[in-house]
Image (cartoon, rainbow, N blue to C red):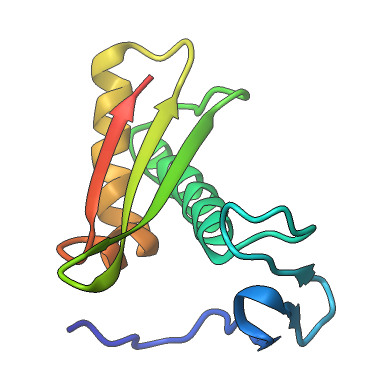
Length: 138
């Protein structure tokens, strides 16, 4: 397991009530109602939050990879993330798909950025070998 040598940022949240509760960051910038997946509740759920965080981080990682290759990310770069919650062997599991759109970049350059980003992104590192992940170029 890798250990952090220098902490760049620490996110601090407090969640009450679990999937039927609420989460708030210490700075108040995140203040969200939570609802179970598939319910008709007004809030988001942990799987949506994970998908949003991973896709945002992945775009940042592609930006870093593009800079290293002297490429510019398209202004309309997008990642559609899908995170499934399911069961197997009596327990709960996640699996994910990231569908990446890099309009205007040649396919080989885009694929290279995706592969590099998957090595750079902390969410990708966290999930690697722990959940089933598929990353594709749209």
